[in-house]
Image 1 (cartoon, rainbow, N blue to C red):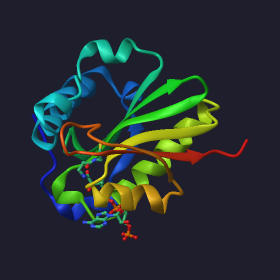
Image 2: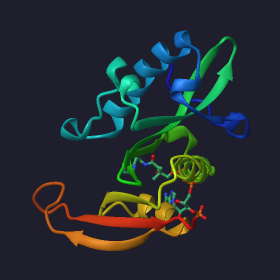
Image 3: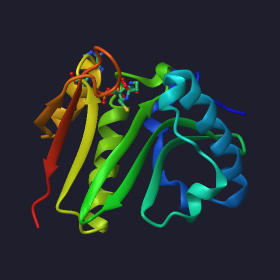
Length: 168
Ligand SMILES: CC(C)(COP(=O)(O)OP(=O)(O)OC[C@H]1O[C@@H](n2cnc3c(N)ncnc32)[C@H](O)[C@@H]1OP(=O)(O)O)[C@@H](O)C(=O)NCCC(=O)NCCS
């Protein structure tokens, strides 16, 4: 299992749809995704990165990877779901060693590209009101607050819905 720890190769990270990668790399990346996801999110928010995911045609996993020797090292990922001509950005995460180096921004560009390929009219997401870092990334990419829901993530953890409009 390989999870990114080396922060010196940020310029070489490439962003791909998980489905477009060779089957052998996908299996290993699914393990890295599970591992990073478990480290970064509370148990009730952990996304199930399993084989069944690849069969869901309305779901795309975008990964930021580094080619190291013969292996792909996971640096960042996003889970996107297509729904009624909109893209729901379900998850976005950059490995801790690679944060604040523009990876979130590059990932967001790939997400917006994917939304255009799917002919979506907009991108929606929910974020914890206290998550200033993620909200900073979203605001920078023209996401605007649509709604706030008290206790959305649990008692005292308010949720904010943000949307990005895509021009036809
Ligand atoms: C949110 C997250 C994806 C940002 O990734 P990143 O690679 O650090 O983002 P970037 O380096 O591209 O920064 C983009 C913008 O995000 C905001 N941002 C990122 N890190 C920040 C920090 N530590 N403090 C404040 N704002 C921050 C800023 O607006 C920044 O723009 P700037 O550099 O022009 O100031 C990353 O912090 C992360 O994975 N967090 C844990 C998972 C998470 O909370 N995901 C969201 C909910 S699913």
